[in-house]
Length: 489
Image (cartoon, rainbow, N blue to C red; front, side, top):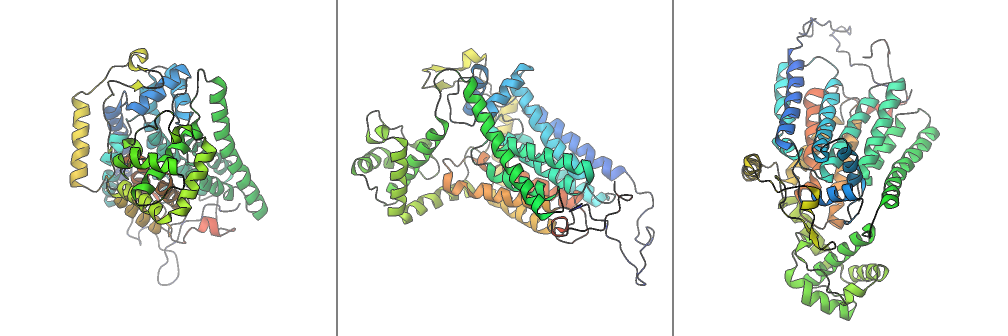
């Protein structure tokens, strides 16, 4: 079968004969202690993540989506997948706590699957080096936050690790792993607006693993990509069919926010808006409070104002004309925003439970009806202090640092047999992150949380997981491989 697991590289002596285990300086019965040590660290990471996270840290976004889950009244322009998931989990008990457990299970499963794919026995230096990678304090602290961004990252991570596992399996096990991976990536894509950038490359990769015939491969690629898009459409359609009350037009609301932010940025950078009435409103109402870091500082358009009256097709047309008329101002605005996201991200960490969530469209605080109370206990304060310490003393909260680590690990793994799925994960992570240069509305660190998580996973694979023989993505480039099923594990 195409891309079957390559056989282990055989080390040869000077006379051309394979070296024996003793000649390589290895024990015929390697100790299981390093392996057990790393597995213990993975379990410790899971226990620590749950201890720091349960029953969940809830920001305004978390609470709004919990309201949507319990009422089916969709009042935000978040994709409905997380609200629907919270509704299911809420039926099993404490929905937000179960959400945290689900996130942790996805992460722990990713670590464990990655570790079990190693080719040979683990030695103590690699085991010791793997421990701080698995116990990444940033990942430990973030798992308990009930955000769609965290869910999306862990679903995508699990999906690509399953693809990595599939590329080193054969037969029915390969098919099951590849299809499971595509399902996880489809769910990841449904959690955030542009996460299809993450999912579709994985779907294509999965298709390439399922056949050795060119036409069949690309037919399967189209089918799996269509399945990913179809799952996303089905989730939104289902949410719309069960929704109650007046709904927020999600796509329209998102595009309107993006257009207004860009118009304000263009005007603030000396550009011209080719509509006199809108230009006057933007200059008077938006430019004084504009910052490239985030849209949240801008006021809502006043009822009856030109921007308030403008229909979405007209606003989008004006937005496009303004960009074409003032490209330098647009690029300055977008570069400044993306620079803030990369170098000076905001809202690095969230802990506790927001005490009041007033929803203007409802005209009330929704906390009482959800049976929630604000929380800011000792653990929450320590998490905040911990995150501030990490920000001030380490580069962990710097997305540029995460990007560099990810790029270095991806380059090293490209030389490892069977690791190209993780290289595709890195490439799609970069594409996903770069998209915020065009569509970003805020400098929140959570938007690029995938960078440190992907870097952690690839670094673990490099240290203690991936195969050591090097043919540079052989499982994708060679239709025929020397694979002996009697030696496969």
